[in-house]
Image (cartoon, rainbow, N blue to C red; front, side):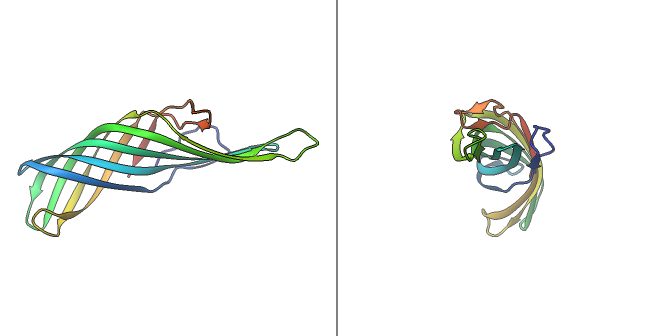
Length: 167
């Protein structure tokens, strides 16, 4: 979920889906370091002006280094506090119509592009249910600040700009 951005769209959805994977190495019983990769939907914005319209979907693909501290660990359940730092590549996918004047019907278009990597930092709390001695199922609440471009991405669509997500 992305808090309200106030970006000037007529309609805006700030809810998306996040899918990720992580691999952590235990440095000490209380500390682990690892790598996280994820793909997150940052929502959609739609604007209509006469015969011109646009609908833009925003995504980010991320690679982050993580550090976890485990204040409580047992054979069945681990509780942790995490911190991540890394980069994310913004993707935009736009569809819409463009006016061709008063006598011709509007033309439809579709385009998509990705941007250069942007800085990201995040942190949160979570728990891991141990399925085997070294494997577990993890759930967490995480907040991430993403510094992405607000300029046009490869002449396709305007970027989302700086975004804060809670997942």
